[in-house]
Length: 130
Image (cartoon, rainbow, N blue to C red; front, side, top):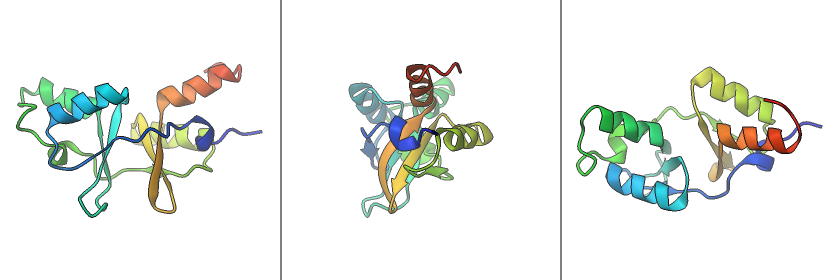
């Protein structure tokens, strides 16, 4: 029986605005122990994702985390999963797009985030060797 995204996703969703600085985003991500934040405009539109990798790339380029904003580093062309996707569907989408996180939408609303780590955790728990 295939496992689904809803079986692996984290329902802890960190939502930030486009004006958050990268330092603020990093602090919130560290406090919540998540590797990605959903970026929404004030009217809850413009969904994008900001990941730890985006922040590290900015720092590595010498940019100031107190001046750089989430908006400037958000990935706008996000691939969304649904809770009913199989874990194989999610893994394939991640591999094809080079992503480590997928925002999970149900009825157009974010309900979770699934990461490569989540997929591995479920595989190990089920005795499936990655």
